[in-house]
Length: 134
Image 1 (spheres, helix red, strand yellow):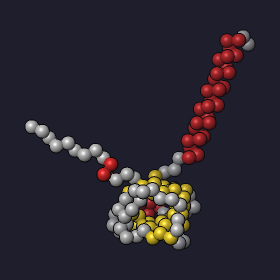
Image 2 (image 1 turned 30 degrees about the horizontal axis):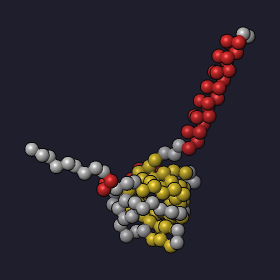
Image 3 (image 1 turned 45 degrees about the horizontal axis):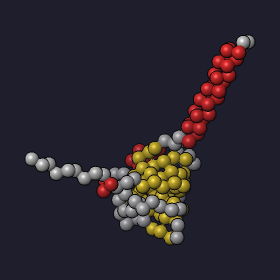
Image 4 (image 1 turned 135 degrees about the horizontal axis):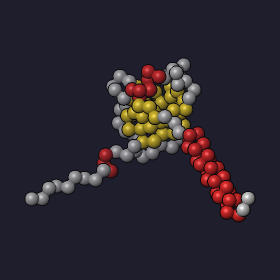
């Protein structure tokens, strides 16, 4: 094998290895995102799996003791999921905020144990509409 062929083969091996590492890194960290309304019919089948659920925090449902939080998220008004979370919450976490929780659902206790909590930014951070000048 001459030098040029060896260089091409070496580059192909490196590119292939990088591609494999990127693929396995991404697929291992990808978690499907369910909305509360989509999650509830599948809840029992998802027992023990790490999943993400999106919903709005039900008004008056946030209970806090030290860094332990219990709250309810909902989709349609009757579709609710009870969530337990331990940790620091974002400033935007409050009644009515749109949240994504990641963790494991336990159908025996009907509680979702979240390890990650993300609160979406409220609309107050969107730019204000400019008044039309004529």
